[in-house]
Image (tube, rainbow, N blue to C red; front, side):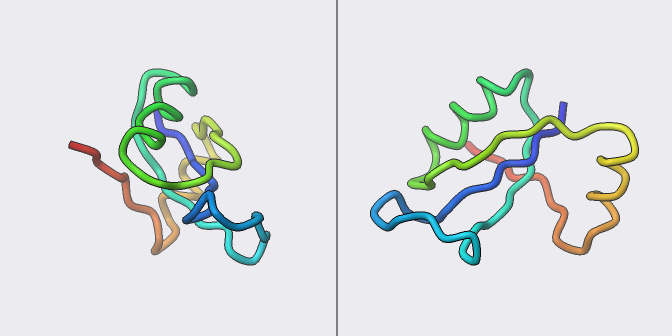
Length: 71
């Protein structure tokens, strides 16, 4: 499953909508996706959302769409 994660780059500042970033990753569940991001980044996660069907197709057509990989 593909998840879209909205986040702020740091937990030290108050979140601002203008600074929200997005990454996409493959995981088995929302919980697993959140854990992957929390364990591998210093990001402040705002939202983890499953994307599929037409919404996934739309996102894949974006030039910014790239699946993040954590080692």
